[in-house]
Image: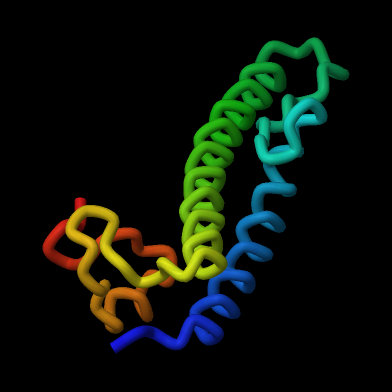
Length: 117
């Protein structure tokens, strides 16, 4: 049974918007590559040692968050591409249909339950 791609496309687009909003709070689009995000560096206004350490720690957290969100954004974009190409809902490993409950839980799922990581 082929999934209703309109339902999943809406879910994916809604999640994409949320992920991009979250990314914009900890990073910015790379001016040289709009598909790439980079973490926002803390301002260097203060010279107090503790404040500099706090800002560096915050930056390191931003790096981790940007990486995680950027990865999810890639999964979402790949799923949207599959919808566009007519290949949505097919396992990337075996080519069989991905279970509907799996797609409902994760509309960007690329594999069936048998081939989950």
